[in-house]
Amino acid sequence: EHETILLVGNSMGGALALRLAEENLPAGMVLLSPFICFAVWWHNLLWPAMRRFVPELKPFQHADFSSPQVRRMVRRMCNGADPDDAAVQQYLRALGVSIRALDQLKQLGRSAFIVAPRDNTETLILQGQHDLLVSPNRTRILARRFPNPPQYLEFDGGHDLVEPEGPAWLD
Image 1 (tube, rainbow, N blue to C red):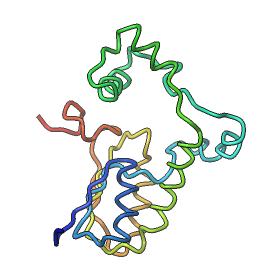
Image 2: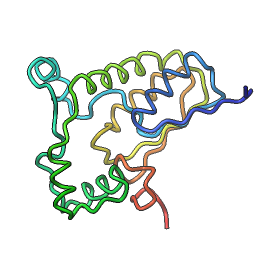
Image 3: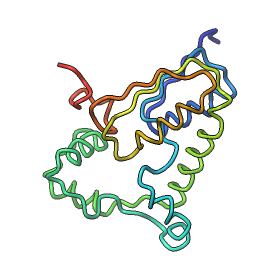
Image 4: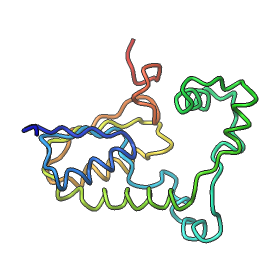
């Protein structure tokens, strides 16, 4: 219904924006730490074995709830929940993520990486320099694949670029 479409995606949403751009021809895109693959190389290496033998992962099973990064993540994911609350910690430690769901995420990231060279859309990519979930090196590789080079900016911070209390935000 609108003539101008602007796609904005953060992390997995960045991969979705790239896929949508292939069909919807937006006027522009803003990608924040766009997911294309797991940040740690050995995750990719071990993935075939994990898919076969591990039905789910428990990302908070051994979490350090005193870590500022973990505390921010808990507050963000659990709508302001108190990371010191024993019930919250118990719930998160038991929380499992299906390997099948992560496999679909991996496939989405790969397909976004593949379609990127077909996209002439004006694009801005924002990336945290210390992002542990989406590697800045991989995002730079993605940016080089665009036929129309995107504007690429890196900021002090991790995967939490949209969080106003994060280091990427100026006072």
